[in-house]
Image (tube, rainbow, N blue to C red; front, side, top):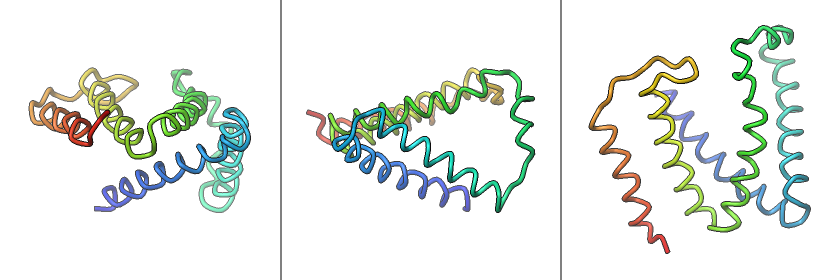
Length: 143
């Protein structure tokens, strides 16, 4: 139940963040906005680490394989693409496409066991669920 609630909060925060970042971009620039997002996220992580975690920072240098450390770079491009998609499509359509794409890519990662994830068996019900989500895009009146 807790995971379900956290996922709902995450989705809401992503939508709000996308709208806020898009508005900041209109007043500054795409990379100024994306940089601000990354900088403030970093500062927030430092504060939360200090009060809540205190895992050894040097452990990051022991992470293998190295490509696992690409999350920050990917995060910068996520910020960029969310801003651009929300600006071009509006928050609702952009978020719908983003979430459906997340579902499809996440399922492919599970099916093929990519990035250290345990390989999952193919399930028709998941394919049907993804198809329903794609149909939701059409129902949402994609123009």
